[in-house]
Image (cartoon, rainbow, N blue to C red; front, side, top):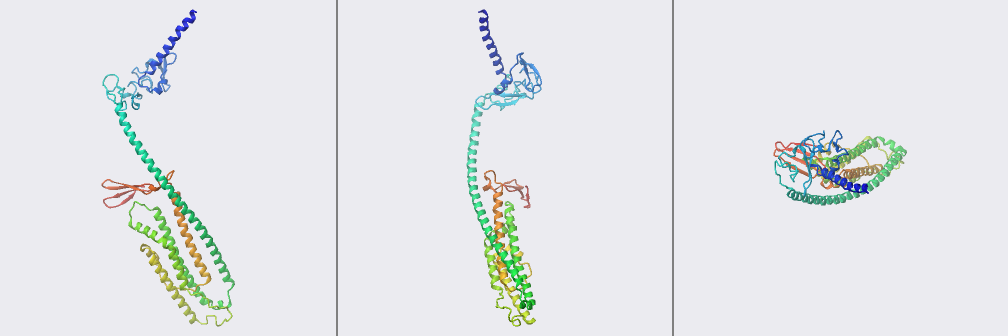
Amino acid sequence: MVLVTQASWSLPCILAAIQLVQASSSTIKGVAPEKIALYQPDRQQNWKCLDGSKTIPFKAINDDYCDCPDGSDEPGTSACPNGYFYCENKGHLPGYIKSWAVNDGVCDEACCDGSDEYNGLIQCANRCKEMAQEYEKIQAEIRRLNNEGYAVKEKLIREAEMTVREWLEEKSKYEDALAAKRGELDRYEREVKALEKEGKQHTTTSEKQSHACKQHNSARQEILENRVKQLREEIDTLVSILHDLKRDHNHNYHDMAVKSAITGYDEFLPRYEQLRGNMEEDLDATIVVDDDGDDGDDDEENTFENEEYQQDAAEDTGKQVKTLTRKVLGKLDTLLPSSWKDRFFSFEQRDDGKTISELDKVRQVRDGLDVEVKGLENQLRDVNDKLNFDYGKEKEWLKLKDTCVEKDDGEYIYSLCILGGANQKSHKDGSNINLG
């Protein structure tokens, strides 16, 4: 019974001792509540530095002497310059200051409760309530701006989705049209080859007798075809160049020549098909078809019998070429932008001609289809370039692409374009430097 009584009396004492230790450890100055568990003594009332480098008596914590290399034994004094002091700041946000600032006679902003100056050298008023109110105002403004920003972002995303859908529809349209035109082009390619093969197999005696004249006309025919083909290739090349220029040019660099070229490109492209059709009509209307019904039976009557007749035929063919050249260049002069014309009218104009045949007509259709295919390929490439560009995870930057902001510092105007470039323009001489 005595033993039980003694045990019953010793248990409260033990509990009280534990509570005393806990109370003493929980009031260690400068330690945050979530770290208080790190400041507990062992059974021998010793304590190990937080970096594990030393073991010191537990009572040496906050004794104003730096025992631990990491300064962890002096969280509430200025003894260790590499430690940190925790400020509770009730009613506001907790904070930390460097240990060397503890009791330095300065009321630190991070310790609005004044707990860092506890030695009485200076009295720091508790400003946590006022600072909390000011902080809440700032946070409310931040939340307002964030909400507005999210709303604007959602709008930009919705607009980008609509634009992307339109691009995808354009892409599908161009792909369908391109597939159809390529099939048609292949068909005419096969027809050209078949007619060329048939022409070789049906060479008649009368054709051989008139070979000199027809060879002359054939040469002129080839010249005319090359001239027309040259014009088409020149246009296709320039259209491709201007397509790349429109896509890649610096929108912030106000070069009037570049803007004029792009404007001409935009005006010319819709009329390109009209130009090609007019050229085809001029070819059909100007060149005379050899359809005199010659079947090769009257050899002497259906051949070119003398050089004088051959010369007259050549002169007539030459006049046809001259007429056709004037018409084609006239169409170009009417439809092309003025900034393009020098490129097309610089070559020598000569009196060339040819006689058109069924093979030539098929070749013309084939060449026209080839031009259409190249045009559709350019348009498809344009759409794919836009679709493949990185406008952000949700395309949120799409509608802001090439939107520019400027800053004038007096000597230079600095311009920054979203998803574009940065430039520096001089007030002195107008020079524009690309900054990246």
